[in-house]
Every structure is written in C-alpha cells, then in structure tokens.
Length: 344
Image (cartoon, rainbow, N blue to C red; front, side):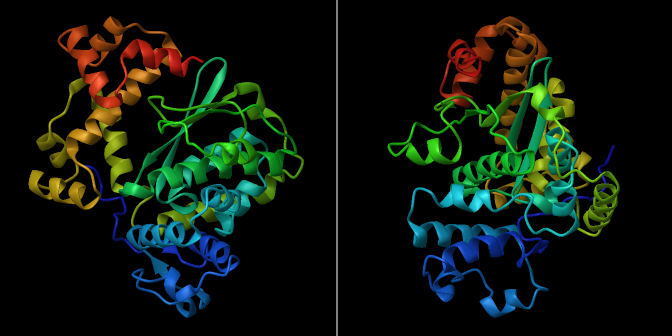
C-alpha cells in the first residue's frame, strides 16, 4: 500500500519565523548578540521576521540554532530556550495547550500537533500500568543540534507542567549523552532525578499526575482552539517530518524487517530516491530501521518485562546471540546493562 504524500522535509518552508525561531532570536538579542551575526547563513534578515509572514525551513531553523549556540556559548542556553517554548506563541495550537484540562490532554495535543509545536523533533507518549514515558525522535535530521533540542524539549515540558499545573512533578530523566562536567544547569532547570549514558532519551512520570485537573482549563475554548489548530495542520505539506513518518511506518512493520525497496514502494518513490532523501536528512535506511528496533526492544523490556530471548523472537532475530550483538552495536551497552539503566 502506498502512503499518501503527507510529510514535510528538511527544506520545506513550514515554520513561522515569528513564532518558535523568534523565541531563540529574542533570547540572543537579550544577551547583546548582533542580529546579523545570529542570522548569518540562515538566508533571512531580522526585518523579514518582524513582518510576521515569513516561513522558514527546518534546515534554516537548525542553522539558526547552530549560530545561537556558538554565539551564546553558555551551558544554560538550551534550558532557557526550552522554558519559553510551551505553551508558546504558535497561535491556536498554543492556546489549546494553555487551556488543556490536564497534563495528559496537553501531552496528547503535543504529539498530535507536533508539526506546529515541535517541528524538529517528534514526541511520543507511551504508558504502562504505572508510568507515562515521553520521548522524542528526530523529524528532520537535527545532526549536531540534536542534544540541544532534546534538552530544550525536556525543559519545555517540565516548565509547561509546572506553569499550568501549579506544582513541581516528580519527573525522571533518562539521557543517552554522557554525564556532563557542568551538571548544575540540569539540576536547576530539570531536576535531580537524572540518569545519563543510557540507551534512550525520555521523561518518566507516574500516571496519576496526568489526570490532575489544571486550574486554567477551559473546555469550550480549548475545543475551539484545538479545531483551529487541526485546520492549520491540514494546511501544511504534512503533519509530520519525513523521518517521523518513516519511523512510524517501520514501527508498524518492524517484525517483518522490511527492506529499503519495500519502504520506498510504500512511500511512492524509487529506492534511489528514498536513499537520497534520507541522506539529505543526515540519515540512512539502516539507521532508521535500527532505531525502531531499539525502541521496540526497550519498550518490551520496560513495559512488558521481556527477556532477551523473547525480544529476539519478537523482532525475528535468528537467535538471542545475534540480537545481543546488534543491541550492543545500537547502544554501546549490553541488553542486561541497558535493562538496569532504564529500570532505575
């Protein structure tokens, strides 16, 4: 079955420059950074953004982030940026978030409206009997900006939940990156329940906190804002980035270990075209397939308590030894070490 062409790509001009990118620009201007230096290579001028009509591509946005990181040269940049992102200033989508009944509803909107609220990373929400797990996946080829975006996204959700819910929540943070030398900024902006050098990037929270009522909830206004946001979403090239769409398709077919040729057919293009597009997004088909298999393995470990043999069988590996070898290649960790880290 061929998938309808409903995705955006790295060079698609869908991001309103006066919304999320402007948050980062204002953060930099507030620290005395010259706008011409900040926008060098982005292909726009500050005056263009002030006009309020300009849309830029993920590629331009990533270039802006790279410039900002270099010019700010500060350990707290990602966290300060993230704290300003949600509910944010993304029109009806932000209004729907701000008026949500509770955190669970807000996170569901964040996932659904991700092209408007978090166009560079795709959030995923998974739950078991006790916990909710929020993770992010690269939507457009973030490259060296990925860690910055992950830290900003975590800070955004933590700040939003505190601001709209009126309380500090017991978030637990899992990050793939090594423990940084300067960890104080993580303590200040995220919390102290931090776990580094693991197999995944995610937030964990007891499920009970998802349904606690938020004091500013407004059911009727929130419903209207959500409908308007969905209309805005339909006006885009697609509701998700190419890597996000491929990731979700692979997730549905992961047990079949689909070939590049099959994926290309499903996306209505030749294998050569799909390879070229993935290269443009700083990725490859094998990398995407491995990422999905890793995500499924971690889910089975964490949520269902599977052992290596069960996970290997589910993912159709020939044997557990072959699976363990692949898992070590994906994460640098043995499956047993990864299980210990995610169950902390």
